[in-house]
Image: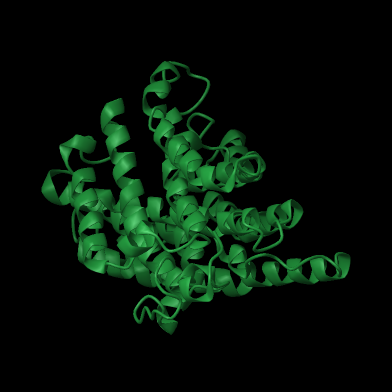
Length: 393
């Protein structure tokens, strides 16, 4: 189907301010769940509600799925050139690795909980393979499991795009949706792998979370399709908010497992993962499937866009910032004072993130652009400039 000018949606734009704002919200959601746990809010009703802020990771994964797949969705319909694999891999590496390596080196060297890390811990964390190597998720860096999952998706995406090119355009959405549903079975597959001592929990591996990426990939397909039911649903903000809240509450209930960090049954894990996909879809769809001229005043504001650009730094540094907050306040972990700990963690975290963006992330990306301009002056421009900003903790 050819998309006419009147049917165009906001998600076709190269840069989406509201998506940047949503990225900032998701980053703060990750901080909330970790602060809640570290201040003792890990049981009871409040523990369940605060603990399920970890579904912010689903939002990040959906954002990456959308931003990194929409170039392939456009190319499949003849609307844009096919994204270049070389550029894609270089931009992914430069987007995450420089700031990440700086954080790992500083945290493993200076943080008291991590300053006696073994060579195995160093190697696993520097190579983002800690979800596969036992006992390598260490203090100040435990949140990086999701970045390791993200890297798995980055590496798989060119293969998925190659396979999708073999499908008729009309079959792409059913294929992605089917893979998302099949990924729920990983909760049961992992049972057969958990007895091994040669790797970490398989429930932390990329297949377990494909549905979260698929939520964004489906949105990328619909962005370049004619206006239909998904678009009409996404433009009804109250029903989408109800879907997000309902899915969140189910994820926070015993149906999705115990409170805290304990792992539930395979069925409970599948429920939690499915609800995460619904939450992510309901939050991101209104931003990308709405009409192109729709304003998102809060998420698209200058402040939220700026925080969105800094959000990767907040993610990689917030546990280190949290470790600094306890002595500043003169309190111990797991002894309460969540509001003050949260506020101070966000202040410290955003400050470090701004420095990381200004001194590491932005200069490295500019260096890559200059390098590509020198070495590939005649190459097609990137399909979406926003790909350079896509990152999901």
